[in-house]
Structure formats: structure tokens, C-alpha cells
Length: 338
Image (cartoon, rainbow, N blue to C red; front, side, top):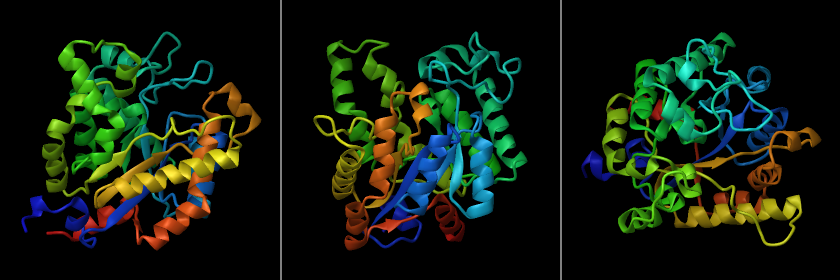
């Protein structure tokens, strides 16, 4: 069998037909609550990986915790080019004077992906990526991988090019699904988007557009970019599950009920995924009273954390022989492949 006919999981040496997962906690460093959610999801739950928002106030605290308690943790950088909350905001690490196209009137990163695309140059984006990596290294942390907050780096091809460029240059795995992308396509609702474009009902600036901006054309080039990353010596994902924020049972569920519901949704997602290595994104937070002043998403984030620690999800993973992995392991496996 040709290498191109195998899943990336097989090419990395995992058994044929196996489902290999990274449960990944985004938004570490964003707040105290976010940090606590990540610790619990990884230490008591099935989450195996996370990424840190380096411009945010609690990023250094998160790294200090890992250095003391889990220095081999799989922690990458959640490259952050937006500052989306109304009253809780952060500036670019490169400084707003150095990246004016990334900076709004408050001197902070723009709230939306669309604003970044409209105002920022690829050079400014690359400068900010490097500044965020530099801060992590200054704190003594070597990131295990790179990914993108709010998908901004996937939303515009020139930004994606710089993301890949920096990862290859520094030898840091970049999160990229270059395989079958079954879950990714389904979660992005691509059939609906294509239909809307075909019949002329697609409109720039709609809610749907805002959530999936620019990603609709990515998949035609995904396999080529996946091979580029692979040939550069970096691991590649077969698939990506992007967002569970809309998962909520009817009525007014308790935190435990909401978490159990999300755990069942994860089980169903795993049942329907194709064999290969996939990343499942959660936004775990152990919500404190102060979090309500940041965002109204606290209930969903607490449910994410509880789903990671849910006994039924743990039991299903063990019963079905699902393999849990990390970007550290993926890179080590990639180094061993000729």
C-alpha cells in the first residue's frame, strides 16, 4: 500500500483501523477559571493536550504550574490574533506600535476574525506569531505544537501560509487536518454553505459566515498542505472536531447534566469518526463567580470540563480500545518515520 493511501495515524505507526484521539483544551491562560478547567480535564479526565493564549493575563501562571507539576505536559500555543470579549481584553505581544494592523482603537487585538483579515498584513501576523512563541520560550516553555484561536490563521490563505512557515522553520508541529476531514466538514456545515453559495443566498457578514469565515475553501488544498507538512518532518492530523459549544440539553440542565450530555455527544462523535488520528477541541473552565464578567459562555465551558471527567466517556474509550495521544508523541513518531 502506498503511503498516500494510508491514514496519517498508520503512517505514524499506529495500528491500521484504530481511532487515535487528542482531547485538546483550548484557551489556557485566558483566565483563572480556564486554567483550573484545563488542570482538571488533563489530570482527572481524558484530555491529553492543551494550548496557551500567550497575550492573556493568566498565561504565565499556567506555565509556572506546568513547570512545577507536569513539565512533560502536552502544551502548545493557541496563537491569538483576536480579543473578543467586551470588557476583558488583551493587546498584541509585539506591541500595537509594531503591528498596527492587528490593533484596534484600544490598542488591543480586534474582536473578530473579519476585522483581522480586513486590517492586518501577513507580515504583521507573522511578527505576532513569533512574539508569542518568544514569550513562551522566555518563560522557559518549549511549545509542543501551534494552533489558532478562533481559527483566524485558517481564515485567510496568506495567514495560513505564515502559520505553516513558522512551524516548519522552528520544527514545531502545527495543528492541521490533512486527512479525511469527515468530522471537520460535518461540523463546518459545508454542504449547506456550498448550497447557499450556489443559489446566491450566501451573504458576507452573516452569523454563519462569521463562525466559518474563509474555511470553506480550505479543504480543496488540505491534502496538499498536509503532505507539505509531512514532508517537512511534522505530524499531520486525519481529522478535527472543532466546536462543542452548541451542545446543550433542553430545559435548564444542572452542570452535571450538561456535562453528561456533552460526554454522550463525544461518544457519538467518536462512533461516527473514521479511523485515523483526530483532535477534539474543548474549552474547559472551572467557573468562578468572576467569569460572568468575562463571558456568558461559562455554562458550556463548565460542561466541557465535566464531560472530560465523565465516567461513561472514560469507560467507552477503554472498552472500544480508543488510543489517546499527544502532539509530543506524534512528533516523536514522525521522527522515526523514514
